[in-house]
Length: 291
Image (cartoon, rainbow, N blue to C red; front, side, top):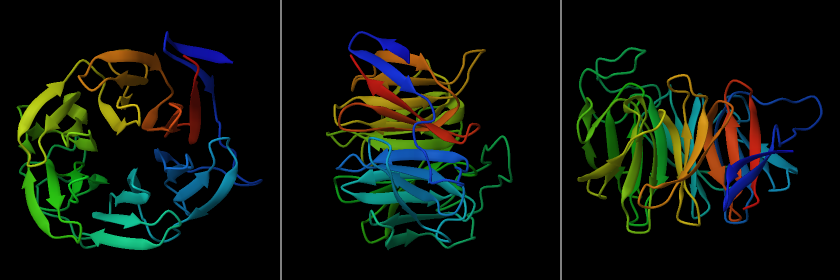
C-alpha cells in the first residue's frame, strides 16, 4: 500500500475504496461526508445521488432518485444531510435515510447576476440563488448557503427558511468572491468559505464580518472540519502541481499536504480517516490515518 503524509499525519492510501453492487458504477463524485456513526455518504451525479457505506466499505444502500438534478454540495451536521442542486438553484436538506426536510429557492429560477457561464465571475451580486454550491447548518440555528457558480455571495437563513442577510460581491478584495465553493465553521462560530477561483479560504463572523484569510493553496474545492478541530481541504491542480489534500489546524497552519487524484470533495470520519471524492475517476479514495 502507498503511504502519504508525515509524522502524526501519515496515511495509507486505498484507491477506489468503495465497491458498488455488481454491475453498478459511480457517476461523477462531487462530495463525501460522514455521519455520527461513521457511515459514509457519497454524493454522485447519477441516480440515486446519495450512496451510503459503512467505514469498512460495506454498501448499505442509496436514496434520492429524482430529488436532485445536479448534485454539488453535501454536508452532514447533527445527522441531517444538507445538499445543493446546482443547475436547479435550490438547496435542500434530508434525513439520513433520504426524507426531505427543507427546500430553499425556487427550482429552475435563477437570480440575475449577469453570469451565463465560465469563468463563473458574476457581473453583480444578487439574491438566492444562481447555481449554489454548498449548504450547511450552523450551531447558532441558522443555515448558510454559498452561492458561487453564477453568483458571488453567502446567504444566511433561519432554520425555517427565512432569508436573514446576504453578503459578498464579485472581486478579489476582502469579502469579495470569485466562485465561493464550500463552507465550514468552527466551535466559535466562525465561517470558513472556500473562495475557489481566488485560491483562498476567507473567514467571517456569523454576521458576515471579514476576519481574515488563508492563502497559498490551489483553488479549494471543499473545506470540511473534522472532529479533531482540523480543517481538511481539497485543493485543485495549480501551477503544475497535482491536486492535493491539505490539513490545517484552526489557526491555518498546514499540518500536512499530499498529492491526490482530482478530488472535488473530502470527508473525514471520527478516526481521522479521509475520503476523497473523485470527479474524473468517478470513485472514492480512502486515506487511512496511521500517524
